[in-house]
Length: 330
Image 1: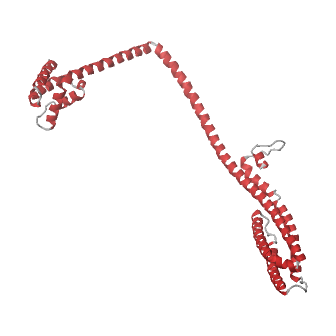
Image 2: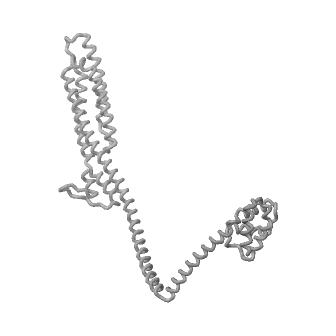
């Protein structure tokens, strides 16, 4: 993967690096694949395979036409000749598989290699079972066949090595394309973030400038007569709010002794036991006494006084409430 490392700048010592634009990675990889010597190496292996195929064909014909010794025992002769027929048939099938594929691409080479490996396995299995009988009759022919099968096995190893290199190159190319695609997306995202960052920086600078100007205006305004008057009014307003809150607390404290009586009267008014003239006033007295108008307070208190006997209060409680009502009216 040295050339892939070079593409992305991971150069090893004393190696020339290749610098490419990400957009040109795919076309460069296609050219790199075309420059591969895979097809040439396969042709060289197929050329040697053709030579082995011719030798194997001659050896098969020689085995098929060979004559056994006249003094061979009949039983061994029959077994050997039957085994020879089986071996010759299997060897001819294998010989046909030695023909190279028409296409010289990696997939065709792989399919041819796979079929030839399976054919060689079946041939060796058949040969293993029958060779003892055939070797007893035709020892020299069998040695030649063994040599041919060994040559085929070595060629398959060489072909497998080339296919492995081609597949590794294809895997590295695929990985390189995937990596380039991810990098393009990430770089695009970085460009968007940079654009947003520049926009935000400009906005920040503008806001900072405006804020600085407003701070200057505020300082000048606070130092002016109007600013000083405004601060004084704010202090007065805060003081009045505190006084208002204190007065509301005092009003609540004044109405608090009547809370139980007001609640019972509101309950009876809701059940129509009594008809309340100042119902809204009573509700306000229960919730927020400070909202009750001065003109309404006296009338509502007198109405409460008139119904006090019907509220079921204890005598001491009723006396305290009456005294408090008189106090509030006064």
